[in-house]
Image (cartoon, rainbow, N blue to C red):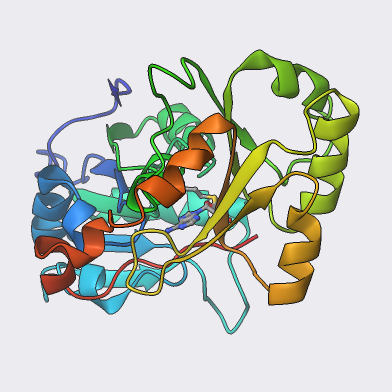
Length: 285
Ligand SMILES: C[S@@+](CC[C@H](N)C(=O)[O-])C[C@H]1O[C@@H](n2cnc3c(N)ncnc32)[C@H](O)[C@@H]1O
């Protein structure tokens, strides 16, 4: 979706000398494999005036940025670990006063658990033109690179994407895991490793069998992708035993059985992807 506020114009100076606002592009960098960056996103990196990127974006993607562009790491500023969300949004607004093409580069897809929606809202409120360039989200790509189709005519006709990180807050109630357990045949969880014992407990007390297949895919689509498969009844112990850590995508449901059958499917080893080098990192949990 592209959304423009009334303030979106081209950025040439007006007669009064005051610069009109530039445009902010919320660009998805994909899950890691640089071959999964969209052509549109790459084109924008090549012509951006400034790129504000998330922590851990790999050198390979950053190398796509034109050398004359300013690069700002939103993960590190003024010696601090990471910018607060409000600071990042303000930075985008300030940059759009100065530059015609401002790229906000995010891992995966900007609107999938990436706070892209919040940034878009604030920018539009500030009268700044915004365009969204979707990226391939890790919730789809990581299972795919692990040989797990999220839907399959025999096993699953529905998928739920959910965050495992969210707690109940001021604006919304906690995730209804009972509804998630019964809502679809495949469940894909972002940021689910830290809370995995709680999530497994919620899903099994809601009626999912302890034998339900589950897969964890870490650093999906990168050369160092790791996978761990098991069942709801065993996975927490397996994670403890192996030290399997975030960032990872969790897939639950019968489709996970395809992982073994498709163990020969590793897109990043198939040629094109592997020739493109290293990949984008991510905000971990
Ligand atoms: C803040 S969310 C951002 C998601 C991102 N916007 C997307 O569309 O993929 C970060 C979480 O996404 C998941 N994630 C992102 N990239 C991943 C990858 N390459 N492999 C596995 N999980 C990934 C992990 O669950 C991680 O903790």
